[in-house]
Image 1: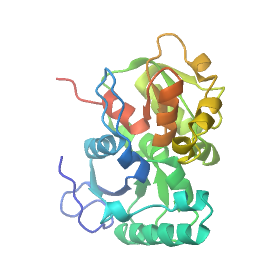
Image 2: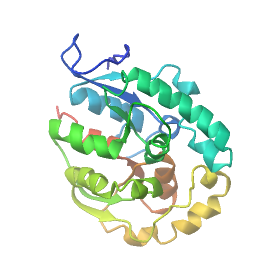
Image 3: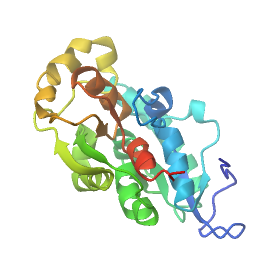
Image 4: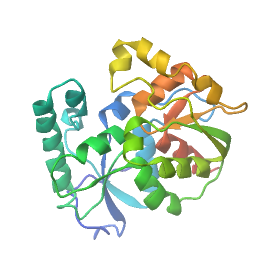
Length: 252
């Protein structure tokens, strides 16, 4: 797939006639791949790029991604000044790439979208759940569905009130959905689940009770939450983009 990473400009692009979008792949999504499943799902970042291309967008991305972060990891560890420095720098670059907010900006993790909203800048940052349901899903053809998909609403998604968007994407990809009712916070708490796995294990101890028979996959809008749930819920959890890319994948 060809990624058009030229400086962002108001869309549609004069060169291609395709609409322009600035995409920031979150740190967590870049670190976590897709779990092994029968559906051969793509990792979140690859799935987002595939979906944006499939929906007719030209994609611009920030330069030097390895040095870019929304700042939330610093904030959660009690370093607000460093969080403001790192997140503010990213927000300024996103604003520049979006030509002062003329081009939409989307990220793939609810935590990043929520945190970036707290910094000044011309470019509002949309989370994948919002953007996929309003701008991408209407341009896709669903070619295959799962019988049932489990849905986890992580903490940031709840604060952003994204539950309807997340569930709409899941419903487009499955005949039925099962929203986890026993898990409000998965206990991963940023990266704490990596260092204190008992937090994640305790918070998700009833998750298997929410997974109906015949359900083989779940979704969350944060990769760390998906990783923790995959360990304890009995089925793999993936990002929304990974599921939607599979459901709209052209069949040959």
